[in-house]
Amino acid sequence: MSDNPWQDDRGNKDASITNKEGMGTVPYSSEAGGAHPAPGGPFLIGEAMTGGYGKGPDILHECTVAVDRGEIAVIVGPNGAGKSTAMKAVFGMLDLRSGSVRLDGEDITDLSPQARVARGMGFVPQNNNIFTTMTVEENLEMGAFIRTDDISETMEQVYELFPILREKRRQPAGELSGGQRQQVAVGRALMTRPKVLMLDEPTAGVSPIVMDELFDRIIEVSRTGIPILMVEQNARQALEIADKGYVLVQGRNAYSGTGKELLADPEVRKSFLGG
Amino acid sequence: MDLLNAIVAIANYVLVPAISYGSQLALGALGVTLIYGILRFSNFAHGDTMAFGTMVTVLVTWWFQSLGVSFGPLPTALLALPLGILGCMALLLVTDRAVYRFYRQQKAKPVILVIVSMGVMFIMNGLVRFIIGPDDQRFSDGARFIIKAREFKQATGLSEGLAIKTTQGITIVTAVVVVALLFWFLNRTRTGKSMRAYSDNEDLALLSGINPERVVLYTWMIVAALATIAGVLYGLDKSFKPFVYFQLLLPIFASAIVGGLGNPIGAIAGGFIIAFSEVTITYAWKKVLGYLMPEGLQPEGLVQLLSTDYKFAVSFVILLIVLLFRPTGLFRGKAV
Image 1 (cartoon, helix red, strand yellow):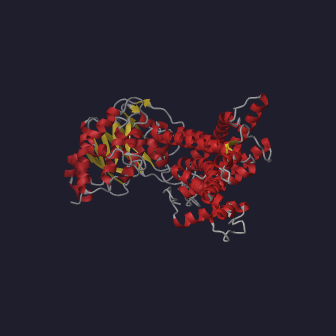
Image 2 (cartoon, chains in turn red, blue; image 1 turned 90 degrees about the vertical axis):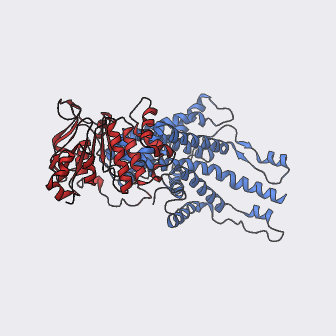
Image 3 (tube, chains in turn green, blue; image 1 turned 45 degrees about the vertical axis):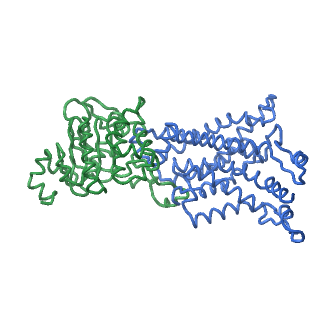
C-alpha cells in the first residue's frame, strides 16, 4: 500500500480540513468477479490461503480454516499469528495470491466483501464494529440494510438474545459499555440473517464476567443453527466451546482438531495454553 | 419611547439583516459540513459551487422573465430555483465522475482531496465567469418589501422605521424549511441513516451492505441543493457576483468550524454566530446609543467598531478564538 502516492499520510493531520475518523480501509471494488459452483466440502472454508495486505509480504501461508453447519470453529494462536488476517482473508478484505474460499457449494474467492455479505456472510470485526454516533436500534437497522423485507421479526430475535439492547435501544451505541458494544456488534451482524457468522475476538477488552456471558450468548446463537467461525485470544475458554479448533503460528496451520483434542494435546497445552 | 425606538433600530439594522445573512451562511455551512462528514474533506470549491448553481438560476430567471412568467409578489428566481438545483447537481455529479471518483478508487487520503477540491474550485470559478461574466448581476423582482419603513412608522407612531425585505423573509422561511427537511432526511429515512452510518464508520457501512457510491451520489445531490439555495438566497438579498461567492468561502468555513465540523446543528449555530458578529461589529451604533444614553452623553462619532470593508476579519478572529480555546467547535464536531 505504501507505494500508492495517493495514500501518503503526509500533511494529513490537520482535522480542520481532513476528516480521518471512520475512514475506510477496505479496498475499493466496483467490479468484483463472480462466484462459480464448487460443490462438496464444508459449509465455509478458506482453503490453502496465501496472501497479505496490498503488495506487502505474505502473512498467511497455505492456511486453511473451515466451519460446518451447526458448528463453532475457533482460530487461536499467539499474537501476530495471522488469526485476524485469516478471518479477513475469508471475508475478502485482502488479496489472496493462492487458495480459495468456498461458501455453501460456491467458490467466492473473487467476490468483494459486500458481495459476500449479500451471500450470507456476517462479519463482526475486532475494532470499530459499531456505529458509535447512532442509536442501538439504528445500528441494527443498518445491519439489515441489504434486506428489503420486514426486519422487525429479526430485530425482536436480537432483542430476545440480548435483552439489554432493548433497554438501551434509543441510546447512542458509543455510550454503552464494552460488553454491550460487543452485543450490538453481534446483533448488527445477525440482522442480515447470515448463513454463517464470523467473529473477530468478540471478547477483546471486556471483563472476565462479561466474557463468560458473551460466550454463553455465542453458544445460544450457534444453537439457532448458524455456524460460527471465531478468532479468540482466550484460547482455553474458546476451545472448550469449540467443535473445531485451529492453532495458527506465523500464518500457518500448526495444529487442528476438535476443541477437546486440542485441549488435550500436550504440545498445544505447553505452547499456547500455559501448561 | 426612546427605548422602543432603540429596539426597533436594532431590529432594523442588526437583527433582521443578521438573521437572514446567518440563514444563508448556515445553509452554506451545512453543505461544507456534510461533505466533511461524509466525503471526509473540506471542499474548497463550495463557494464556486454556490456560484454555479446561482448562475444557472439567474439564467433561467432571465429566460422566464423574457417569457413573461412571473411569481406574483415573489421573485421569479424561486420558480427557477429547481432548475438551478438540477444544473448544480449535474455539475457536481460530472465533477465527481471525472475527478473525485478516481481518488476514491485509490483510497486517497483526505488531504489530497482538499487540494483536488482547490483545483476544482479554480475550474468552476473560471466556468462561471466564462458563462455569465465577472460582473454584478441583479435578478430579484416582485415586491421589494414585506414591511416598509414608512408604513411601520405611521402604524406605530415611532420615529424609527422597521423594514423587512421580501428576500429576507423568503430567506428565513426557506432556511427553516430546508433545515427541517434535511434533518428529517438524515434522521428518519433509510438513505439518510445510511449516509450517517457511512460517515461514522466507512468499513462497517460496507460490511452492512451500504453501497458507498450511492452514499456519495446522494451527498453530492444534497450538497448541490443546499449550495444552490444558499447562493440564490444570498444573490436575491444582495446581488450575484462570482467573486463575492468565492469570498463567502471564509465565513462559511468559519461557521462550519465554529459550530463543530461534521455536526449539522453546529453548522447552523455557527452560521448565526458569524453573521451576528459580523453585523454587530460593523454596525454604526450612534443612532441606537443616541436613544439609550442620557442627554449629553450621546456619542458624537459613529461608534462603528470596524469598517464594513474589514468584515472578513471578524470571521477570521472568531475562527482563531474557537480553534485556540475549543478546537472541536461549540457543538463537539470532529476534533480539529
